[in-house]
Amino acid sequence: MVLYFTGTGNSRYLARSIAEGLDMPLYDLNTCIKAGDTAPVQTGQDVVLVTPTYAWRIPRVVSQWLGNTELTGAERIWFVMDCGSEIGNAAKYNQQLAAQKHLRYMGTAQIIMPENYIAMFHAPQKEQARRIVEQAEPALQKALAQVRAGQEFSPLRDTLYDRFMSGPVNPAFYRFFVKADAFRATDACIECGKCVELCPLNNIRLENGKPVWGKHCTHCMACICDCPKEAIEYGKKSKGKPRYHFEALEKQRTERVTKRILTEEEMSDLSDKLMQVTKGMTITVRYFVEDTAHPEIPAVGNYVTLTGRVESIDPVFRTLQIAKVVVPFEDLVEVRGDGIVAIDDHLGIAEPIESMP
Image (cartoon, rainbow, N blue to C red; front, side):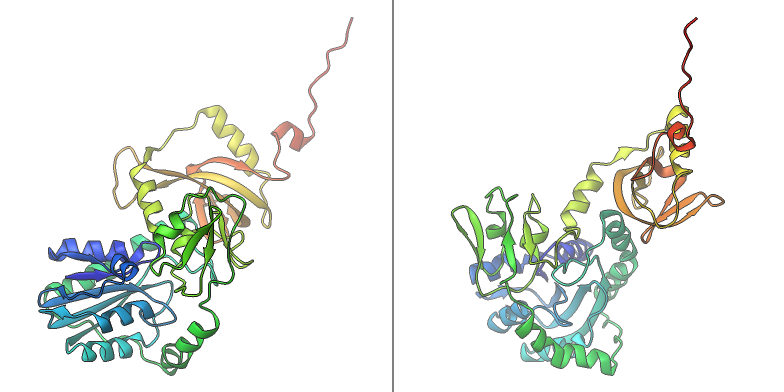
């Protein structure tokens, strides 16, 4: 059986892929934890636990649930942890948890997925997130093959830094940082109650139609990242940051469109505007991102809008770099920004005035 806990969909995606690849049943821990359900679960011999990484370990709410729940029939357990960058020495604590459950520990796999912890870090833009998900595929397939073969995962890095982050930093992080006090709803809130529904700890209630947070938060980011109006902020730390939710990527992929061929007039206008772009400018572009994971002819994908600082413009390789995103000229459909004007205005060419006879 594949068990999973998720905040913004990364672990659900990985767990679903593993369950389908192994023809195993899928078990949603969010529902169990929200309902306080610790009834025995008939898992079968092999268990794969898929979770995000919270403070360099599996989420505390998951380890607590496992400690209180009997996994009937289980003999072996693999841990799959997704993260934005690293999981530290989480494997040590996973091994201890397996021993407590009298299960054979089969190792811990780390899979890099898009960051969602906007209470502290930045989530990627959608096109960056899509690339990260695509780059995670080899690690996912490797883990899947090892579980299918009944093999242990390879040991992970175990440095003094890793031990420090998963050791003393983990409880300190929960004590000083994992709090709901900074969450608030803005005037954009439409009183839909989705945040209440999503919260796995029942820590959100509605008062006069608006969400109010209690004291039992696990910082899963479900409420803030999946709000349909982006009407939730975490103090000043989340302001202006993109929200990340895996299902939004899935929805965007299913709504793919065919790449449009620009007219000569449109290409000329775009070329005129690119002539005015210089390094350091802040501009907004709209461009086509091909769905390379599901290639078709003609190319299909999505049109993405990106605003940021121009890092470089390369007329030889015909690329424009905004922040960390490199956009080929051929994929651009729109360029705008302060100082980018019609070419005649840019060159100072006035319309000719006909003189009266």
